[in-house]
Length: 192
Image 1: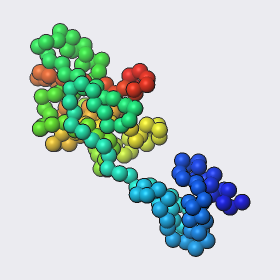
Image 2 (image 1 turned 90 degrees about the horizontal axis):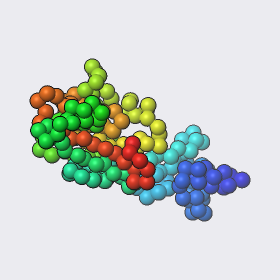
Image 3 (image 1 turned 135 degrees about the horizontal axis):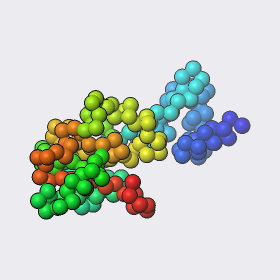
Image 4 (image 1 turned 30 degrees about the horizontal axis):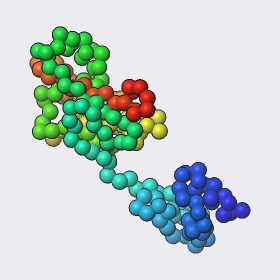
C-alpha cells in the first residue's frame, strides 16, 4: 500500500515513479536522509517523518535581443519591433496602444538581453510611483505562467517585464527617437 501511495505521489508531480525510485523514497521514509530523484533537479529528503521535495532551478535562459523573432522558452516567441519617430506618423498612437510593451530604444546601454526570471529583481514601472519586487508581483500571476515570463535587461538593470510593464527609465518620452515594441506570442495561439 505504501509503495502504491508513493508511486501516485511521484506521478502527480510528474516525477519518475519506477521501481528504483519508489524503493529509494521508501528507504528514506524508513531511515531518513536524502536521495536524488531527478539528477541535478529534484532531491527528496525526510525530516520528522515528512517527505520533502526540493527543486533546484537551473540558470534562466538568456540571449541578446535582436530585431525580429527571439526565443528563450520553447513554445513562445518574442517579436522585437523598432519604430522610428521620423518614419512613423502613427508613433504616438502606437505608444498609447502598447504602453506596457513599448520602450525608449535610445536609452539601452550596450545591448539588451532577453532572459528568464532571476533572483532579486526589482522594477520601478513607468505607471507607478514605487518600486515593485518581481518576486512579490509573481504571486499575482498564474502559477502555470510564472516560469515562462520574459524579462529584458541592459547593463544598468531591468528594462521590461512581460505582463508588468516598462521600467520608468525606459519609458517612451517626447525625446524618444526610436521605440522598441515587444510582442510575446505562443507559437500555437494568438498574441498574449
